[in-house]
Amino acid sequence: MDADSGTERRFSDLDRESDLIASNLASLAVGRGSRIATLMSNSLRHVEVFFAARKLGASLVPLNFALKRESIQSQIGRTSPKIVVDDILDLGIRSETLVKKGSGEEGRPAHVVTAAVDDEAFVLFTGGSTGLPKGAVVHEGSVVWNAANTVLSWGFTQEDVAYVPFPLYHIGGWNIFLIPLLFVGGKTVVASKFEESTTIRALDDFHVTRFVGVPTMLYRLVSHSEFEKHDLSRVIFGCGGGALGKDVAAKFISRNYRIFQGYGATETGPNNFYISPERYREKVGSVGKPMLFVEAKLSDEGELLLRGPHVFKGYLPGEEASATCFDKDGFFRTGDLFTIDAAGDFTFAGRKKDMIKTGGENVYSVEVEEAINRLPFVADSAVVGVPHKEWGEMVVAFVILREGKEGVSQEKVREELKRTLPSFKVPKDVVFVRSIPKSEIGKVQKQVLRENYEKGVH
Image 1 (cartoon, rainbow, N blue to C red):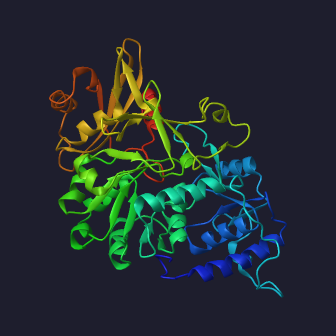
Image 2: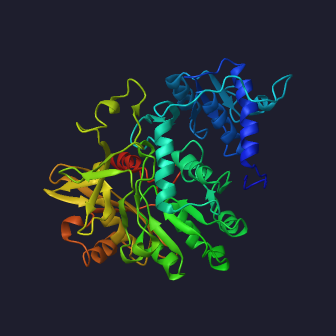
């Protein structure tokens, strides 16, 4: 279903419409091994284009149309698509041309191929918050096994309804939970964008049972006045794309809503762990245990390593990351640090590159952020390490104060933190800001913060 227009498509409609699009794509010489780049908003037609591509053995390269034009053109050049379907910037043909009927085009296309599990299904560009976005080549098997893991762990049935707030140029738009619900005959409501009040009303109006958002989305939901006006007890909420703040989780739990923390990445599905909402209440912050077909372990330094049929095969040819993203046993190096407790539950500790080494001590930025965010006068924060000639790195906090608390001093923040943190974890510098740079799905862009700090731009 399209959340904005209310347009609905049954599975038979999806099959018929994607047949028509596949016929028109075939007439443009799209076939097995071709790539189709798309610059399209979240829509049912975007979904139809994907399935049409797969019927021909082609793959989809959904591009972020919010990027600068030169960045988009660079990504088109790196992927060499057969065609570009563009409803936004006029860099290719419009999608409406792919649904025009001609003589003999209304039946099933003659060029349908049988997909193999190793066939390329997507090329998805990672966020690129720390440099040039990497093109992850996601194969058919990754999509299928992610769906299997999700259906089995979440217990999906045809009665489930998911609301999808993630853009379709992001792995979450497809795999949380559009494609998994197609496997079981469930219903997906595709939203063109995330907006707090619209989302809250949609969760109620469409009788949604499953919703996953990044921490920023969930924070905005519970902070909106509409949140208290609706009964959302039928929804199972999940958090991905970062650690959910304990205060935010507590607001869901206080209303007796079911919520839990997940973990994943473009390269790994993205669903890898599961903890039931009931167990999460007892272990807020944990992502639980690996899903049935996921192998997980920690390196000597605590980096999470993942292996399984859901993990992608690698990046685009020529990308430096391809040579180092897997260890000698075929485990994907996530770049994220985790801990495992006695019960075998995994808990996110921070990004490997965000572990701050100061004066010989290790400081996890997420731990400091949680301490800062618990302060009653703080609305949000981000913690980074910046080079320092004496300590190696210095802990620096960027803090957004709550409205009406603008008079709070840097020293006040530091003094309050000393009550709960050892001195080496207390930020040496506290920078008050009005906003924290985040990606389009709400991930904090810490490299931007580091660079701005070193330039003296706050």
